[in-house]
Length: 162
Image 1: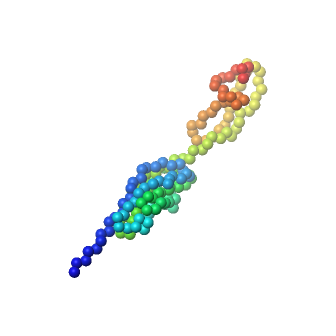
Image 2: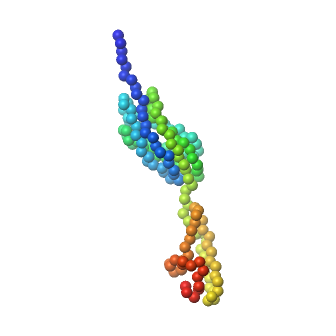
Image 3: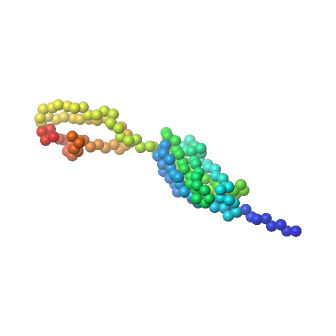
């Protein structure tokens, strides 16, 4: 007697491109497609491998979607920057398919903040005056001096014309 068993074909997973995200911000959801000709797609399971789990802990990678259309969301923590690889592994219990991509985490942009405003000064007509300000934030910082809400376009301003 000859018994023929149905073959179990391996699952497939589409590729994802390399991504760049800021620390503390969510990257995604990033779409990808899975398939398995002989296993219910909702029965397949995902795991991840991260080259540098300090940069992106595996618990900060979440999967979504259903059927063939799936997503992955990556949540990099604050205080970590750099580049690592992420591999998504898809299994039907017998075979494993995987796809990998690079994730670069950059420093969060810090909005400019003025910590010391320029001081008011009284001077005689024609005299020179210097104003300064102390500001912080992500470089490069730039500024625009204003007087009464109007941009000053000259580096040196004649007091009598202001």
